[in-house]
Amino acid sequence: MKSKISVLLSFLCLVLFMPVLVTANQNASSDENGPQKLQNPISVQYLKTQLRKDSPRLILTPAIEKELKAKIKTDPIVKNYYEAMKLNATEIQTKELLVRKLEGRRLLGTSREMLYRMTVLSMVYRIDKNPVILKRIDKELTAVCNFSDWNPSHYLDVAEMSMAVAIAVDWTGNALPKATIELAKTSLIAKGIKPSYNEKGNTGWINGTNNWNQVCNGGMIASSIVIAEKDPELAAKTISRSLNGMPNALKQYAPDGVYPEGATYWDYGTSFSVTTSSMLESAFGSDFGITTYPAFLKSADFRMLCVAPSGSYFNFADCGDKTGSSGDIVLAWFAKATGNPLYIDKVKFLIPPQSFGKLSRLAGPGLVWLSQFKAGNQTNLPLVWKGDGENPIVIFRGEKENPSNYYFGGKGGKAALSHGNMDAGSFVFELNNVRWVLDPGVQDYNALEQAGFDLWGMCQNCQRWSLITKGNLGHSTLSVDDARFNVTASAPLANFKSGSFPEATFDMTAIYKGYLKSANRKFLKDSDHSITIEDQVVLTDSTKFLTWAIMTTSDVISTEQGATLQQDGKQLNLKILSPGRVKVSIIMMDPPPLKFDRKIDNLKRVEIRIPTYLFPEGKGVIKVRLSSPE
Image (tube, rainbow, N blue to C red):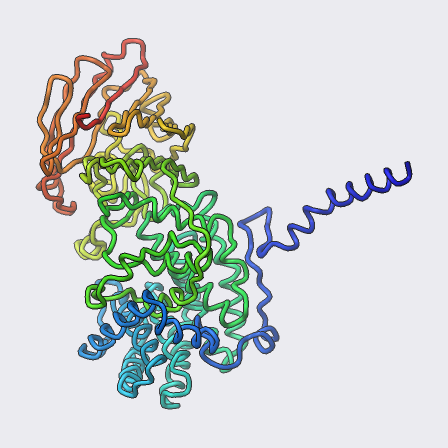
C-alpha cells in the first residue's frame, strides 16, 4: 500500500511540475500583457563575455566559412549559386559608385543597391581574396559613409544601408584600410544607430507590428555588433531594445504562419528576421528565440502555398503579381532551419548561372544558408489549408496528377492593416494555368505620392480606398449599395471543412455595418474543376441593392444563365444558381476609372446587380458557380 501511495505521489508531482519545466525550457517567455518575449540577456557585461571576438561574426564564422568553401566545391547548388554570384560581382564593378539621390521621399533604392553590392562583393572577396574586389568595396563604403545622412525620415533607408555597411566591414575583416574601417564604424553610429534615438519621431518601427520592425531592428542589430568594441554601451542598449521590440512583429505570424501584409511582404519582412537570427546565432551562439517563435517556421508553408501553378501569387494586400525564375534564398533559410528539402527548389537553383540575372540583395547570406542545409524528412504541402489570424485565408489546390492545375485562394480580414485593402470576401481562381479571377494587386507607391495622392491614410473616407487596387469595388467580393467596407471591421473565418470537397465560410457581418444585418460568404470546392460562392445575407430596411463581382482579364460573353469566360483557347462558365431573374453586366476597367489607378490590360469587372425586392422576406442567398467544361 505504501508503495502504491508513493508512486501516486510521484506521478502527481510530475504532472504538477511538468508545465513549469516546459515553460522554463522554452526559448522565449510569455507575458500576459503583450506578445511572447524573446530572451534578452544583453548588457555591456554580456557583450564583453559572450560576443565572438573576431570577425567574421555576422552570419559567417570561421567554422561556417570553412564548410561553405568545401560545399562550393562539392555541392552542385552551392557551386552554381556562387558562380552566379561571381557574375554579379563582375557586373557590379562596371557600375558607377552610389550617390545620395532621393526618389521622392526615399533613399531606399540606393540603400538596397548598396546592400546587394556589399553582400555579393564581400562574399566573393571572402572566398577568392581578389584585391580588385576589395578595392571596389573600399570605394563603395567610402562613398556612402560620406553621405550627409542615410535619410532617417524614412528609416527603412537607414536600416538597409546600415546592414550593408556592417556586413562589408565584418566580412572583409582587417583587409580594408584602417581609415575606411574607422569611417564605416563612425558612420554606423552617427548615421545608423543614433538617429533611432531622436525625439522627433520616425521610430514607431521599434515596437511596430509590420515589416518595418523586422527590417529596422535587423539593421540596428547588425550595426551594433560591428561597433560593439567601439561603443559597448550604445551597442548593448540598441540590441536589447530590438530584442524587446521584435516580438511585436513576430506575433503577427500566429497562429498558422499567415503574413498579414501578403506573400511578397513576407519575403521582405521575413528575410530580415532570418538574417537577424543568423547574425545573432553567429555572434552570440543564440538567436534568443526567433527561430522557435510561435508559427514563424510555419510561415514558409504559407509563402509556398501562396504561389499558384501558373507562378502567379495569391496576391492579396500589397503583393506582387508573380514569383521570380530563380531559387528563393529566404526559403533556403527555412530549409536550413528545418532540414526540409521542400523549401529548396532544385530546378530553379540549378539553372545556368547567367540565367539568374541580378541576385537578391541578401545573396551573400543566402549562399551561407544553402551551404548549411542538411536534408532531413520532406513534407508535402496540404491540398486544403486554412491560415487564421488578422488576415485569414484559405487555399484549395488540386492533386498533382490532375491536369487542371486547380487553385483557389479566398480571404477575410480587414482593411485597417499594414498594406491592407478592402478585400474581405475576395478570391483568386485558376484552372488550366489560367488566372480566371484575379486580384488587381499593387501599384507603384512613389508615383502616387509624387502626384499628391494620399496613399497611406487609413480612415473610412481616405483617398486610398478610391483605387481599384485598394477598395472593395476593385475586388472579387460582394458590395452593398456601392458603399465602402467598414475600414476597421474584420471578417473572421467562421467555419472550415477539409476533405475532398472543402469549404470555408467568412463572417462578413461587421464589414457591412449599417447596410446589412448579417452576411456570410461560403466558398465550396464541389469538384476538381469548379468553385461555388454562396452569400447568405439579411437586409436592413434601407438596403437598396447588392453587387456580386469578379475581376478578370478574360473575354466575357453574357449567357442566359450567367456568362462564359474565354482565355488562351480555354473556357470557364459562370452560372447564377440564385437568385433568379438577374443578369451579368460587363464593365471595362481598361482604361481604369481614375487616372491614379493601375492599368491592367483587358481588365473587366463582371458583376451581378441584385435589387432587394428580389428578397421580399428581407433575407436571401446569392449563389454562383464557376466551372470549366468537364
